[in-house]
Each structure stands twice: as C-alpha cells, then as structure tokens.
Image 1: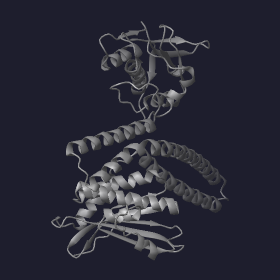
Image 2: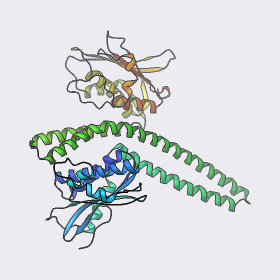
Image 3: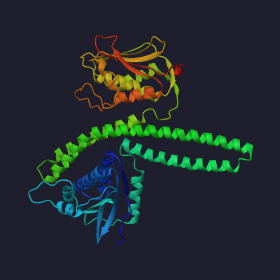
Image 4: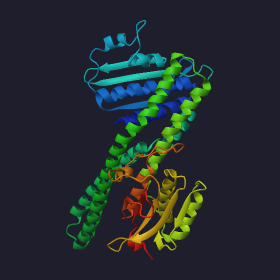
Length: 448
C-alpha cells in the first residue's frame, strides 16, 4: 500500500486566532475521515493544544494535516513545527508526559491521552516538531490519491472560517501583489535605461512608472488598512470567542471523563454554543464587508422604502410608527439606505420598555442647512456618556428578554454611513418625554 503523506491542509500559526482555525479545520478533516465525534474532538483538541505551545514558546509555527498509512491501517496525522529555541531536556520531557497514577494529566500528558500516538522531535536552537496520530476505523474504505486530491481541492476552495481567516487570505494576496509590483517596477526601470536615447519613448515609460507608483501606494494603503482591521478583529474576536470555545472544551472534557450526562443535554449545549459562535462570526463578517460591495445607484423614494421597512419588521399590536408626510428622492445605493433604516427602526422596537411604544421617522435640517434623517422613540433613552459607546462592536446597553443580539448592528450602520461620507449621532427624543433620537446624514450631493 502506498504511503500517503502529501499535505491536505496547511495552517500558519501567527496569532491566537490561528488556534481557532487549526481546531476547526482539524475537526472538519477528522469528520470527513470517518472518525467518531468523540475522536474528532480529541484530535482537534490535541492539535489546538500543541499549536498553542508553538505560539507560546516560538511565537509562530505551522500545522500540516494529512493521511498516512501504517501496515494496513490508515492514520489521520498532524505535524506541528516551530523554529523556536527547541527543548533542551527532551528525554526528561518524554518521560514526564506519561502520567503517574492518581495524578491529573496536564499539557502534553493530556494530549498523549487524547490521541493514539504522539511523537516529539527537537534540537536545541533548531525548533520542535510534534506529530499527532489517530487511527481511522479498521473497516474504513480504501483512501487513494484521487480521494485525497478531492479533499485538498475541497479545503482550498472552502469559504473562510471567520472574518479573520478571510482577512488573512487577503493579506497574503496583497503581499504577493506588492511583490509582483516590485518586479514590474524593476522591469520598467530596466526598459527606461535601454531607451533613454529616444525622447518620445522616454516620456511613455515615465507615465508607466508614475502609474505604477500610484498602484503601489494604493496597495500599501490597503495593506495598512487590512492589517489595522486584522489587529482589531484579533483583539475583539479572541476575547468574545473564548467563552463558547471554552464551554465546548469543557463539554468535551466532561464527555471524556465518562461522567453521566444525557445525550439531549449534550446536543442542547453544543448547539447553543455553536450557534453563538456562528452568529458572532456572521455578524463580524457583515461588519468587515459593510459598504464594500459595488452596488449601482438608483432613484430611491425614501417614503416608499421606509414603508417597506416598517412592513417587514414584526412589532407588538400596541406599537405605533409615525412617518413624516414627505421624504426626499435620493440617487443612491438602495440596499445600504434600506439596511440603515431597518436597523434603527428595529432597534427602536426591540429595546422599547413602554407598553405603548412609539417611533417617529422623519428628516430635518441642521443649523448649517444640511439635511439629516432621524428615528426617535419613547423608550428608555441612552445616557449622554454612553452615546458614542453604542456604536462600538459588541456593545449592548440594555439586556432585553427574548432578544438575542451580538451588539454589532449599530457598528455596521455607522460604518456604512461613514463609508458614504455621512455622519451619525444621538440626541434626546424631541417628540416624547423619554427616549432617543438617532440622527444621520446622507451626503447632500446624492439628493435630487
């Protein structure tokens, strides 16, 4: 039987969020390899723990997942490598990872218990390599190179696991683009040296260099922006993703320990945590892509659009929504202005604490003659010192029963408005004794 060791998945370890990617991809490969859910969790947990060590002791590393063979058995294997200082006392470490009786396993001891085989190789100053192996079921159908090729294609074309994963891909692509631009710039300069005696061609090549410099500057600016967003997401998501990940890890440990717990309860806990992570990831992806799409502008009748918004939102029968009699006609991207009004109106309904809720939607002009739009309600209102805070990601001022919110909606609204050159702010309600008035501008040059 041929030895099958070509990588199916490769993951670079650069930040803590890469541990989430390594865990999820290990779970996905373990699932399609035919492992049970328990063994999938064990394998992915071991990969995540060893990867964490690579980040902790070497600041970076690489994970390679593949299928290999041993005699007549197939194995799912992961190789985690780093270029750190290495392990000086490797022999002592190997001896210590075999847990003694009546001692609680930790670190590599726990990893060794999770998988079928664990091998460590390290040289001082040369880095460390850890191989984790899990036997596939003995009755597993044959796996050939054609099947493995299909798996590689599947994972290479799969959608990103998270906004961080997508931004990381974009960064690698931007870096490659910058390298290509450097090559092109070098080639153009060589051409200039060859045709310096020809004035007319010299002028043409000068134009090429100037345009190339603009492209390079634009790519550099985009790369800086992406890196800034990457750092922001790394900080925010690593904080907010820890809770559901830790809950799933605790569930896996509980199952592994053999403690009695019903299957229905396991599925309920697992489903709740997975849904929480999915909602968080989807919301962050929506935020990262907000306003970036190329959408054609059309004439938009705001009164008709806002009417459609109010019809699409479910509300209590006692709730009253009042609209201004007339609204301007805009020449803009309909989908974006729809999302802004939909979010603001639905928030005014969801977080209203009155038995007879009221919402007013209209437009006016400020002291500078600039048109702005507003959505105000008679709800609990927002304190002045919290009004900027509500536009930050994951901010929820009022917990409302039966309302599941990620706290990203207003951040998306603000980003869309700022991307178009507008502004958004919060005032006290003018029509009601209590409540908030959300005001925003949409650039005047879009007005017809």
